[in-house]
Length: 167
Image (cartoon, rainbow, N blue to C red; front, side, top):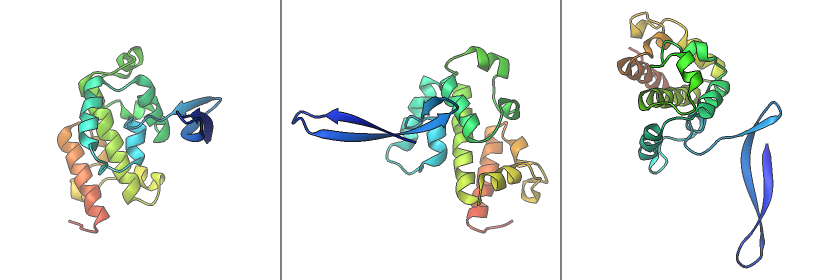
């Protein structure tokens, strides 16, 4: 949905500004640039992308941004319980998450963004994540996401699929 608003500059010309807004029931949710949900759908090659993400991780991910990521990926908090370094009950009590939790959330966002880019649909990617992979030692890729090495292995496997390099 696009919302149009009138903005007047110093020469009194009217300018129409558009803001992308996702509808969530009756509430509208804005996806701010570099939020985890924004990262899923946008290029990693944007100037200053990684430096901006480092800053965002240091500031901490807001609970609303985490909830939006869960919604956008069609998942539940429970599905990510073993991946995140904090329990779901402690996450529900906070409004901004610590550095370690924020970093894992951004890793998830980047991984889902890559997966959506490589696979034909969100459903195909989620199915791949939940299917044992021979190249990952017959492990389910999603179960490897509880460590940085696991993230790296899964990400490398997705890139191999992207370039048709099978082991």
